[in-house]
Structure formats: structure tokens, C-alpha cells
Length: 557
Image 1 (cartoon, rainbow, N blue to C red):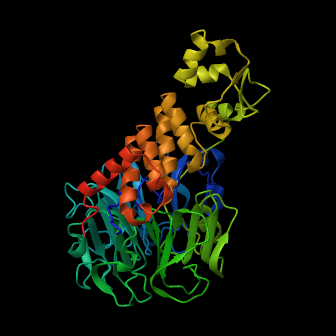
Image 2 (image 1 turned 120 degrees about the vertical axis):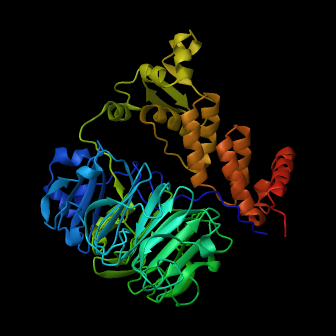
Image 3 (image 1 turned 30 degrees about the vertical axis):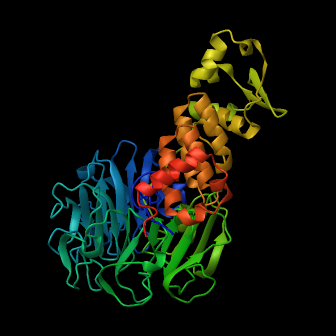
């Protein structure tokens, strides 16, 4: 039995922690893209989001900390949206978009640009030879225009562009498509170009989509139960249907049945999918080794790759390139496919800390595969100074002893950051007078991670230790730390540890984590029930799980 009642997968093109925008935890040097090298430190420090695009990666759009939108570059097909066709090496502000919070952005090959705002509005400009701007005409879009046809009262949360077609996802899970349709990539059932947004229905009619991506002339969507649907050009097998015939309407990738897909990405003519267990599948064109299979043979159906590597947490590709990248749970970044002219047929371990660097340094053209989010460290902020002084014997006035090891801290910081310590040091506890406090209830890694969290707001701990930290966070009433622990545990869930994690979630009253673990156990019921953790668990919890699973239909034929 393998019931698929998947939790909602992460969307593939919206904001954090979504994979289509870069996580703040991974510092990216935007100057790795040559166009930014002419900007001074002050200008660079104002950038909060950016995208490099174009057939030669010669155009840039970026958003500043005060939500101003700037562009510069070659301006092919009016893709800068400045109102004219002039190129500019100096950033120009798009006043029309001033103050609007951008949540999703994508670009085509013309190029044309789609941009969605926090308010759910959709704007488009640039190349429009195939009505890919959705305004009912084929006139070039020299400046951003609101796309409203058939989208009234709809809130757009995500956008995706193919070569010359466009897609939008709404907050209700509806997919709309328009533009070039020579291969059925609009999903309308014909090959006539679509001048305005049209809802993609057929197999998606009663589905809730949570992610959309485009290849050059193909389209993919992942829905809330983890299924993947594809339509459009399929000459290289990029739809993963087991054949190479074009599809004019959405078709489900039956080869992924029983798997819950969390993220999908598309290259020029290949596709990648990441499951909720961190498994990676690839299919489609393989001329440059972009599937990572060790050869250059196209694959008409999904094949699993990187099976000997650790859990994958992020995948990367975009329709402008034949490059692929992936990031593992420990932060290792791999690349393969077309890399600076070379064909890398197996995933190659890099020294990069994020998949974005792969595209800056090795993709052709060196575009950004997603809307990049940036953090800056121009000077030491208060937070950075605190982080620097954690576990520093030179400035500490207190130390904890755990398992024979010391951790150096500052009473003032602990009192400011944690109610538990405020009480300890202000209520005449015995510990208030000590220079060394012994800790026996928790392990060294767990307690060190907790103290470091008080200095940094971050937790760096493997999922196995996060259970102990969740225990500590519960004991000390640190609710935000509880949420961070739950996030770490979710990303580390496997068939083997799922029931143990469910048990811990129940024990520590972590409702969100409990729901997540329960659904994962139901999604992988057969495998989970064969693990030692399942049969060694408390009888009452086992009974509750079986009753609850039966109520949601897990045991129906």
C-alpha cells in the first residue's frame, strides 16, 4: 500500500523558503555576474533582489531595499521596460513599479518579462511577437503593463516564462497560460497562439497547482498531492511521458506515481523533479549530459540520479541553459550538463555554497535561474557583533560546562534574549552567583546550538540532534526555536525516522510538525510500518495513528 496524501509541496517560483528565490542563509556575491561590476559598494548594498537574463545574459533587473525597481543592459526587444529601445549601462528606475513588493519574476527568450507583486497583480513587458504579454496584441511592450484579461479578481502568486509563452499561478491553485502555442505549450488543446491568459484545464480542472515551470516550448505543473503534469513540446522526452509526442493538454507523469514531488525545474529541453524524501529524478534532452546519468542519451521517462549522494534539498535549472545543479542537506553543491562549454555527464561536486553560483560561473549564458535574494555584510551590525563574540573566552563573564566541555557566554545577552535566563539571573537562583554552570539534562551539541541561537537567531544542527533541541526549546518555552527545530526535522524526515519524529512531535506538543510527520507516514505507509521505530513505539500512539490514518482513507483498497 502506498497512499499519496501529500502535504502541500514548496512552490517552485515564489518567495522564501521557496527554491525559486535564494535563501538568506547562503551569501551570494552578486558581482560574480559581470554586469554588476560597474556598480559601487553603496549601490550594491541597496540591492535586495536581482535577476540577470537575456540571450547573452546582458540585461538586469533589481529591486532595492525600499522596493524601487531598476533595470540596465542591452534592452533587446524593449525588455528593460524603460519606455524606449535604448540600451543603458546606468541603472534606470521603473517608476510605474515603484513601491510594489515583487514576489515572483520570470523571463523568456525574446526576452519578455513577467512580474507578480505581493498584491497579486501581474505585469508584463518586452517581446510580444506571439502575444506572450497577454494583452491581446502582438505589439512590443515598451513599459510594464498590468495583465488583467481573464485574471480579474485573481491573485497571481507565481509566474513562469518559456521561450515565447507565459504561465501564471493563482493563490487558488489555478494555472493560466498564453502566448506561443506551436507545440501545445499553452495547453489549450490546439496549436493556435493564445493572445490572453487562458485557464489550463482538462486534467488540471479539479487540481490545486502549487508550482509551475517552463522549458523552451514545454510546460510543467506540480499539484498539491505531489503529482506532476506536463504539456507542449516533447521531442526530447522533456514531458517524461515515456514517448516523444507533443501534448496539447496536460498529461500526468505516471512514472512518478507513488512519489510526492516537492520541486520541479526545467532546462532548455530537460526537466528535474525533487521528492519529499530528497530523491532526484531527471528526464528529457541529454546532449550535454544535463540529466546527470553518466551518458548523453535522452530519457523519455524520469530516471533517478545521485542515488549514492546524501539527501537533496534543492534543484536548479532554467530554460535558457542546458545546465543543472543540486544542493544536498549538508550544503554541498553539485553541477552537471553544459558547464563553460564542457559536457559534464555526472554531477560534479563544487566548492560553491549555493546553486546560484553555478549559473553565475558556469552556465551559458550566465543568467540567474531564479529571482535572487541578497543579504549584505558591509559592516558589523549589532547582530553580527554578537555572533562574533559567541563562545569567546576574551569577553565572556560566564561559562557552561557540558560533557567536560566549556561554552563561553555573556550574562547580559542571555538575560536579554531568554526569559529562562532572565529569571535565573534576577531571582537569586543558585546559578546567579556561579562563574561555571553545570548542565546535565542536555548534550553538548544541543546546548551549544541553543546558546548559539540566542546570539545568532540561527540553528545549525543535523535533524537527529534537532529532537533534543526541540525538547530544550519546549522546556525553556522558546517558541521560535521550536519552529526552527521543526523546520530542520521536516527537511530531514525519512521512512526510517518518520515514526520516531511523529512520536517526538506528539511528546513536545509540536502540532505543525505532528501533522507533517503524520502525512509523511501515511504517504509512505507500507515502508513506515516495516521500520523498527513503528513497532517499538508506545501502544497508545500506535492506536491513535491507526485510527487517524483509517479516518483519512489510508487503508482503503
